[in-house]
Image 1 (cartoon, rainbow, N blue to C red):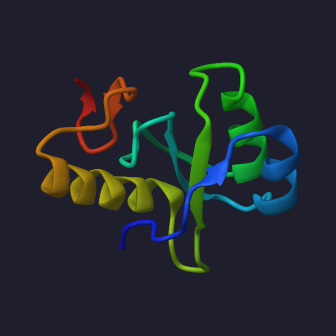
Image 2 (tube, one colour):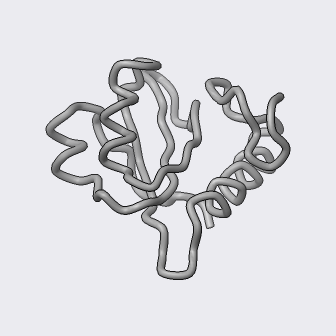
Length: 103
């Protein structure tokens, strides 16, 4: 199931206020984009989103926590499938496809 949350502004205070320390999957985007430019997974959403502040210079994020029986890895694969079905390609900032490895 794709991430349905609205985009949040990507800044330290917003991440700390909204992102949990649970595992899950997340998407990043930049100004002028409505689609995700990056899809990732982590065992700690808050920590990983904070790390991204210095990497790709995203300005918005959204996430989905892993449920009791969900793994972030399987969630990421589902997000990639959904993205590719909708857009015909993979997110441009991703350098690996979690379904197959490197592009």
